[in-house]
Length: 291
Image 1 (cartoon, one colour):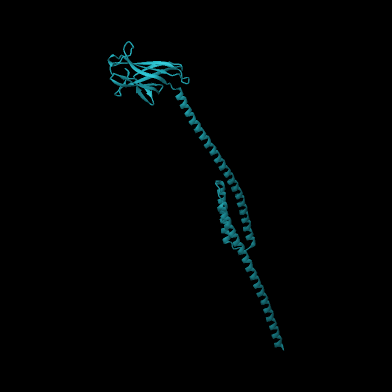
Image 2 (spheres, rainbow, N blue to C red; image 1 turned 180 degrees about the vertical axis):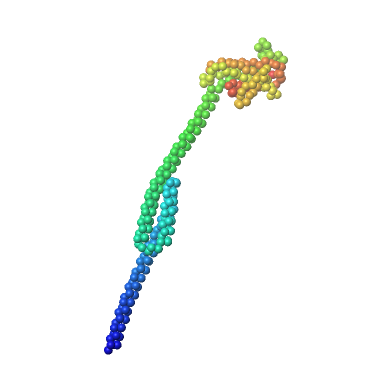
């Protein structure tokens, strides 16, 4: 009887221990499953945050601005994102407190990004306005330049017209040999002088005052009859020898002029040419014969 009693007690203890072990095993299994679920959720949250940080870094990369100060600030924010990613990859404290800390930092970075987007949009809009204004100004400058060029061209044309209008002109140019009495002769042997006669036409636009008139007498062999001192005059950026000259006092009205060349013995028979110049302009020419 005593042994049976002991067996019952022993069996009761075993059943009790088994029950306790079963309860402990069930509790361990449930806790393990809960911990596994919890860690899975933390891991999912962590991966989600890492992906968000990567996307945020790409958003920062996509921002374009010509402002150096903003570019430096954007680079600093990207460095913060990289540093946060490094910390998240190595952290082992599987707690929502740590995850929430990273979420707050991510939110701050997103808020900063929104501010930069607003600033950059504002800068880009301002730059677009400035670019449009610059194009407008350049167009205006081009128009003014073109107008000034046309005005200058018109002014130059007007100066040329005025210059031509104010230049002296002559009519009735003749040249013939005369003797010492001033009478016309036909033979070179009796020629004392060559007389060039012409009339300066009336010109109210020309300047008045003393003017020098030059003549060039060219022989049939193209030799120019010179003056005793071999003096020169200016014509079209060069200097030419002249045969004779005379000063006149021009008052705007028609004026008859005669210029004489003294025969120095260099005359030959043939057709001669006489050219008249004044104030750098060639104002007339004619031909004549000597026998």
